[in-house]
Image (cartoon, rainbow over all chains, first blue to last red; front, side):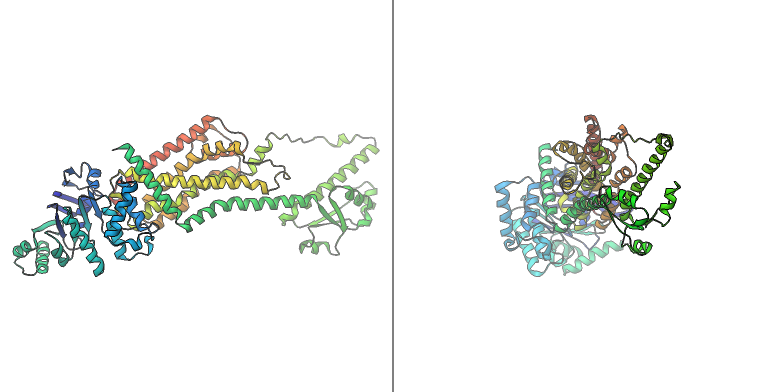
Amino acid sequence: MIRVEQLRKNFGTVTAVSGVSFTAENGAITGLLGPNGAGKTTTLRMLYAVMRPDSGNIRVDDVDAIADPHSAQGRLGVLPDGFGLYPRLTAREHIEYFGELHGITGASLRQRTQELLDLLDMNAIADRRTSGFSHGERTKVGLARALVHSPQNVLLDEPTNGLDVMSTRAVRTIVRRLKEEGRCVLFSSHVMQEVSALCDSIVVIAQGQVVARGTPDDLRRHTGQENLEDAFVALASGERRA
Amino acid sequence: MNFGRSLRQIAIVIRKEIKDSLRDRRALWSIVFSVSIGPIIIGFMMNRVADRQREAEQVRVPVVGMQYAPALVDWLRQQSGVQIVEGPQNPEEAVRNQDEELTLIIPKDFAHTFNQSKPAVLQIVADSSRNDARPTVERVRRLLQQYGAEIGSLRLIARGVSPAASQPIVLEDIEVSTAQQRAAQILTFIPMFIIMAGFVGGMQIATDSTAGERERGSLEPLLVNPAPRLVFVGGKWLAAALAAMASTALTTVLCAYLPRFLPLEEMGIRFRIGPEHITGIIGAALPMCLFSSALQSAVATLARSFKEAQSYMGVLVLLPMIPGVLGALYPLGNAPWMYAMPMLGPYVLLTNVLGGQPPAINAFLISAGISIVAAAILVRITATLFESERIIFGR
């Protein structure tokens, strides 16, 4: 479970995140929805402790992520936005590298790596260097290494951005599976359909603030728009006018 | 922070960076090439110098007008390694066209003037812009001066004067350096090569694992792993330092084998790198590798892009050349303060070790201590930079 309270972050004079609060429950998929530049990535970066918030609280399970970032990171599996791979390492080596950094070794590391390769249908590319990988294959590697330590909480920053239909489906399958396992999945996207199809709960962010939250149905009711995309536009631009 | 866990994580990072860099064949070969090219070129150059010296001992002297000074020609023939041949028709043109290195001309009136005990003229036709002919010309000039001196002494004796009277002063050279020291002076480039190798060897990992890692976008996911930044920075630094040490070892081995293929004995130089030098080389060079890799990692982390980092490396590589170039221009000596300078200390240590005069253990300890402390400070700075969001996410 992830609980965020009054998160703030400025870059110089620019306010990127201004008082974001939400809770992402276990066994549920929470969508962080917002237009480009709304503060989704910055919020997530503070969650996985590569950025320090100016103020606010973050709890990952029962860990204070600001006071004890490494314990929080141990409970998080993260697929950052626009992440990169090591072109000269194989897919398997990527998974094993992160597994080792999480303290998994020997037979259990090999077994867990194989599990992920099977799960993501990556056996054909497991021992190839990643330099020639397609975007879909790269995303799979990124996902697999994020999940190597079986984290209770999974943060995915625009994971389906630019993916083809097949790869998008593969990602959704994994996300649903993580939910079934009782994990907490926090998923960011700027694509309405994606979020409404997948998420149990949606947090809409615009201009660094939470402008709405609830189930997809709640959002429709809240804005009075039948179509969820219209609801999203109403929320995002409504905030901008204010 | 769990210390044992951090150490394990550092080892994991080191292993990954080393594996990664070993697969970068192009970078690997460029390191091997750049650390071996120096010793190999020097090998060729030394061989050429030796060849020329050998040539100078075996001189071929074309003489025009042999019949005018048969005694002189006979005397020359008796000197070892001198071969007298008939001179060319047009001596100046032959020398200018490089058909001959020199030509000795004995003018027609040589015998006449000589017999009158007046200075008799001999002409040497030579091209002073030709470096390769210089030893030969020098040798011939010395032979002729020696002949002149001998004749002069005989003339004085014939007149009842001691030849010593015409020699108001005698210059005597007292050489204080041992043969090994002279060798070290001539071979000052070897310490420089060893230090350069340490510098070049760690460069690829130092840039690829910092500026390169960020540019690829693999830094952010890496930093999500639960470890202090010092762990990542430390691992990357030590991986670079290990590569630097490996390339230092490669250059040292090359330099150790080089003299076997060089006619150093002929040139009056005794130089070898043997087992007795190994401890000294390790003591001088390895702490330097820790320092240079730390410096490179810090600079590469500050660079805005991989390209920028690489161009900074091009500037940094001039650093280890400074003491080498200075040392070649004039002997640096070994004042105690030198050991306390990060790049200079190891250089002076290596020069003395290879010169057969290993400095006291204190000098090693000071130099190593300074290198390690400087490295620790730089690594600490780099780790702080890794905490900075501006550095992690670029600017």
